[in-house]
Image (cartoon, rainbow, N blue to C red; front, side, top):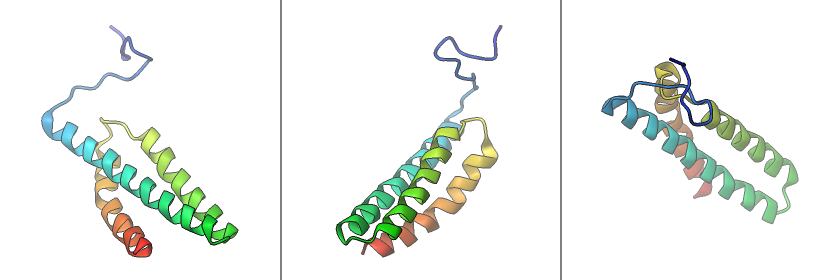
Length: 97
């Protein structure tokens, strides 16, 4: 038996409800941060602040990369996202106003 599923070489993982809920919450937190970065980036572009727009896009890209790399079975990474992203989202929302 292979360690990968038949669909796109995705690693198999034995899910339970708690792990599933935590992984989904981590994905949603990253998605929220990405959305906040989009709003701030668009605001920077509109105001002509190119340097700020590029910085925000870079930070957003880091979130996108993290989201792509996050795996359901990586409890340490999921815990880190759930521990760090609420503060990041609150900080971004404060900047949005």
